[in-house]
Amino acid sequence: MEVVDVNTLFGTWPRAERDISLKTLLNLVNRHNIGEICSLSARGIFYDFHEGNDETLAASKDHPVIIPVGTLNFAAYLGWKEEVKQRLEEGFKLFRFFPSIQEWSIKGLAFGKFLEFIADYPDTILLIPASEGIGGIAQVTKSLPNTVIITSPRYTNLAETIEALHSNPNIFIDTHMINSPDFLKILKDYVGINRLLFGSNAPLSYFLSALLPITEADIPDDDKAAILGENFKRLLEEKTDEAN
Amino acid sequence: MKLIDVHVYYGKWGFPIELVSIEQLLALMKKVGIEKAIMMSALSLSYDMSEGNSELYRAIEPHEELLGYVYLNGNYVEDSIKEMERYLDSPKFVGAKYHPELSVLPPNSPQCEPLWNLLENRYKKPVLIHTWTLPEHNNVLPSSLPEFVVDVANRHPNLKIIMGHMGGPGWRHCIQVIKDVKNILVDFCSSYADKDKIGHATKYLGADRVLFGTGMTENNPWMQLGALLEADITEEDREKIMCRNAKRIFHL
Image (cartoon, rainbow over all chains, first blue to last red; front, side):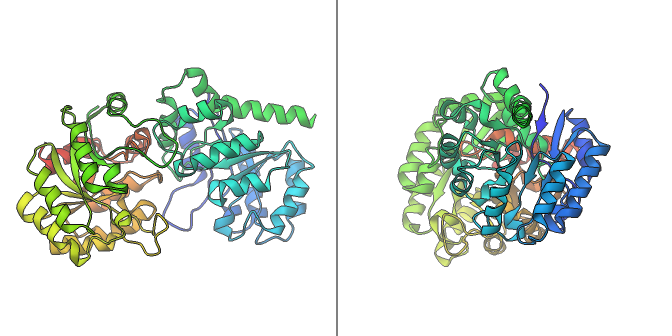
């Protein structure tokens, strides 16, 4: 089964002593035989999104295993539109957001402007953290044609997650923090496997903590393969087809 | 692989889950490789201490691989003492459990003192205390801070205290706070699989003070096992965490 990890990052982590260097991330990729990773530089989270996106692009050119993920900071705000246009031209398909670290809200006006803008590029995919509130994410992205991946939902908001997935066919989730013992069976029964994507939060989190709950779950191998990579690949292909 | 899981719940939860029966739990334990599970009652934690302890006893009694913690609630000290009398002389109950956040009562509150005295001097069994570094369950103030547990541990040096969840998201702070308090151990289960946390605990506390807990059935055991298997520690330390420490602490 080829693994595609939709939730990784690299760089420096200023808020604790953590080794999230690109080298560490790539070592993980090799050790666990990961097919592709969606990744971005933490410089874009903590310091400057333009510089961070440059770093991400450079890393993806050097290491084709990396699918580049852009980011924007709507507290810093200035130049966001030009940045998006530039990154779209460079081939970025995914944009990921870190509102709580940067102290802004997805319900804010600036992010609203971004959503209006990005709706004209429906082949792009947005990654928004569950900590913004599952209901709130579903609400603000309701009329958006783009795919939205909610990162890091937990079992404590599994009910809201199920309803968000029901309410909007464009919403997908990553699985690494759901963490209840039968969450895959519940999600399969109530939503379907095709909306689940594998993400690990590596190298901030233990990769195996995300992988084993999928590989060892009591679901058929076909379902595991779908979550671990096929769902995301299909999503990217569909988006590419739409764009063409 | 032989594992002893020191942090297992029995009962129902307020989120979507269908894995609630003892039979389902036993099947999962077998698949993961958990040889013994030390369990507490979710019913006790969230609603009725006595009813939950009784239900837990009935559930674990027929199964050699299941052991129990008697749940204590500092808001009901006299009743908690009765619960200890009822269960702690039994070899099936190898310790006690206290949840400060769900009791909304820090463990170093004066009214909890009789409980710790009895555990330390009469029953000589460990207590698993939930720890977290933030208020939970919509509480205004935190009741589960590691500092509160350190206070108890310093006043009861012969009481073995296991800090459940190792402080949760604040595990780094937790380890710092308990470093020199030798009668405190930790288990590391939580939804935060932060890389390095097991290595960090092993480095600063020593592997002898780290226990394997999964948080089943609230949590997924594979998540914690994945963390332990990936942790950058020696194989000898890994084995201590997997089972040897629990055997020593609980006399298994």
